[in-house]
Image (cartoon, rainbow, N blue to C red; front, side, top):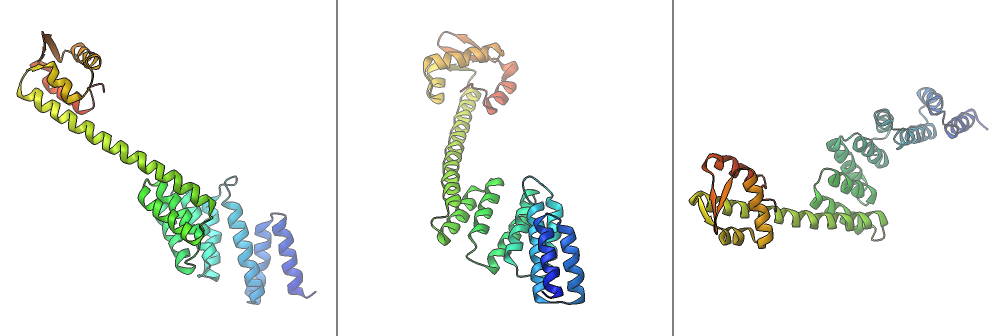
Length: 248
């Protein structure tokens, strides 16, 4: 066994025992003396293994892992796995723009790297860009239709997107209803109950609960089949309505 082979074997044993920095030091010193391809590849693997260890959910040394991934890129700028793992480290630190850039670089080097597309999807979900998350997951599945993580993620995000659209539509509907009600109450301080009921689209029991709540706040009084707005509290009443104060 040559001196180089002995050194590589020693470094591998140290890495196996999680003595990463000792292994890296040995390989770096030898590489400086002899820029050999085998040493370079083993040094890159040492950096990569240590960076992955630091990036683990149990170790949580994300900042430190970034340093070692960048040291790989000094030796091998086209290492797509390193760009990808650098993206994960940034993602874990909520540095989303840098994470997205790293994932995209990985894809530019290896266009069929499904894991980058999957993590771009996760990133877009984290930043509440659900439409873009769907696109990313679908691209991952174009590469590998059986990519189970992307399949589940796509299903979940589509469900969330559907619920988001429904909620947004309902909120707009409620906003339109409030605007109609305020317009009606602005035109007359004396309004029939059936007109309010029609705008709010509620049954009589619900309407009665709403009006009782308004009365408790001194917004109005009841006169037969009419609601009479208290002018003194009109501005506050309308502000309350704009904040969803109908109670529905």
